[in-house]
Each structure stands twice: as structure tokens, then as C-alpha cells.
Length: 160
Image (cartoon, rainbow, N blue to C red; front, side, top):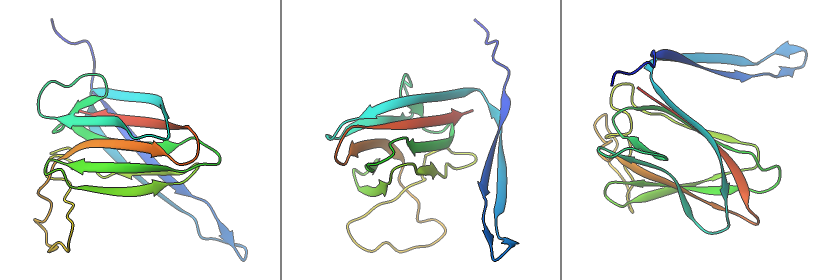
């Protein structure tokens, strides 16, 4: 069976608007991801216990699980107006880093332009020697836990 999906370009525009002392100090930045053939956009209710929200692997992609080499864009937005969530990023060495995503905020993962989330993350329990080849781990899961009460996260993932 042949596909009837025609690849398209995803254009992401980041816009900051502010005027200080009567002067525009805002900024607009945009980038394009060509040949996108797969997207997933969904709202996930995140409880106050940790749940996996996205997974990445080399084989058997499916609902909520993506081919690690094909992912090009990940955005996670906290739709709650009061509570934060904690996002947990785990690499293929089972090391993790976490970050707080406050109410109403978004986080964009910088997927590699040609390799997705392969060799795109490295976490450690001690200092890491930073150089241009330091990124040697694959992102394998993103999980989340809500702070005080259940929060809705909007997930948007695009792949080629």
C-alpha cells in the first residue's frame, strides 16, 4: 500500500513582543522543517504521580512512541493556569535531567536536523566535559508529574 501523505514544511515562529520606554524591543525568529510526514498533537492530563508522555525508539513506533531518528520537533506546553509540572528526560544510559515547566509556559526540544533525538542528550551525576561531540546519548522517554493538582499538557511532535 502506497502512502497518500504529501510531505509538507512545518514553519515554527517564535515571537516576543515588548515595548520599553516607547521603543520596540521585541524579536521574531522562525525556522522551517522540511518534508514533515507525521505529526501528533494531543492534550495529556498529567496526575500528581509520574507518567510517561512520550517515548522514542529505533523500532516499533506507535501511538505516543516515535522513531528516534525521524523526530524533528517537540513542543510541550503547560495549559494549566496555576500549577507547574516537572518534566523528566531520560537517555539510553538511564540518566535523567528534570526541569520545571510553570503554568502557561512552553518547552521546545532541539531535535537534530538529520538525526532526531539520536545522540541528542547526555546527562550525568557529575560534571560533563563539554565539547562538540559530548552529545552521545539518545533521548528515550519524557515523563511528567504535576505539582499540586492534575495539569493538562499540550504535546506537539513532528517527524519526517
